[in-house]
Image 1: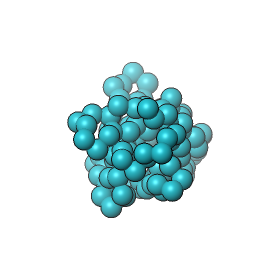
Image 2 (image 1 turned 120 degrees about the horizontal axis):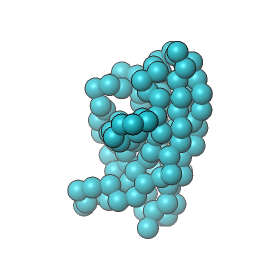
Image 3 (image 1 turned 90 degrees about the vertical axis):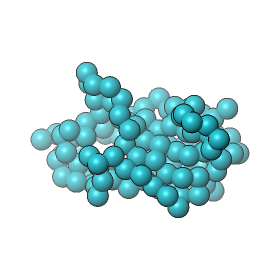
Length: 119
């Protein structure tokens, strides 16, 4: 069982930056691929980025590539999302999720943190 708690959301102007954190419970954090997803009002949840278990491999949605950076600290059981050059279309609830390395889907989800980018 893994519990995920996101933090760091807020209101920022266009072009600004935010850093989201996702703290995980348990002692097997390094066994999980970690991902960030987001859901804007009236839209389906969409993939943002993911990071491998040791942090050596990352993958980004085209919409955030070059602006967002995912990282993790396995000693702190935490994954981060650094968001730069924010746009109004980045406004959404951001969720972190954990995928066990042998699984094909994300099994655990956080409660989400709101990011609002004003124009």
